[in-house]
Length: 257
Ligand code: HXC
Image 1 (cartoon, helix red, strand yellow):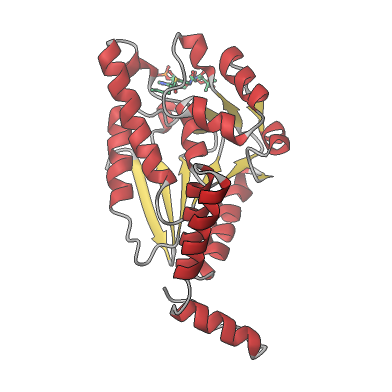
Image 2 (cartoon, helix red, strand yellow):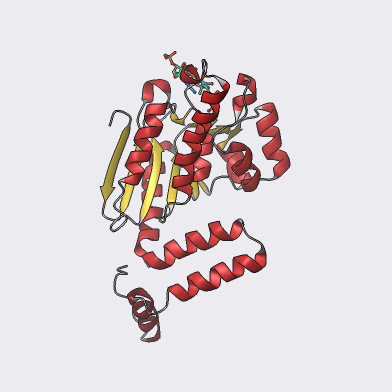
């Protein structure tokens, strides 16, 4: 791998986009490496994934503008699909994914962070969809996910006018869950990932699926989705262990599956 670092510590893995001299911009090679890294995640042992960018300046400063500058209409569409496929894979990965946004999250970088379940930001994080200033639309899901994550009028302003927002505004809008100093960001992401990883894995995965699938369905359909996933947790070792421990006023044994 030239541009992706991947490290697993216990049940938490960290994927780092590492193309620092271009502020971790996403070219085709980065996207391909990201996809094969995600495909290779050992889902038997990894219970939470963190995605971050190398260095302290940028998470991802967007799709690679040099590469995009000469694309035809058909190639542009194909490039959009390539990113969309990778980001959808992240969004639908069975385990939770935390974006540790360590600086610029522009264009494809903002879009990558939004395909993750949870965003934590460094104080120097900047979010934006500056594509209209380059003569294009957001193309890795930005028009869809931003409008679902923050008030639609603010999303439209960011997309039409290219208005960028800093970490404190992203926090106020609910785009990020918390803001940390640059030094504290990764440890905070690892702490949260560890907390998630200590909970019952089947239940955590079922929760991700219930929330995500439910958001795409009507309330009646969504509640059926929840009922089925809720039911699927029963008779698992973790459900028996968790409830037995509560009733015995004890701590449950570590959750296993
Ligand atoms: C290619 C990029 C890049 C990008 C930065 N670089 N962003 N290269 N694609 N998106 C490169 C610069 O060319 C430069 O390379 C090096 O990284 C450092 O960047 P500087 O501009 O010198 O740094 P600075 O002055 O600090 O400005 C930082 C910045 C600026 C504000 C983030 O780099 C910037 O505006 N970048 C573009 C942001 C953007 O428009 N993103 C959206 C792209 S469109 P050299 O070789 O000169 O040192 C997009 C579409 C997604 O993402 C959907 C596609 C289908």
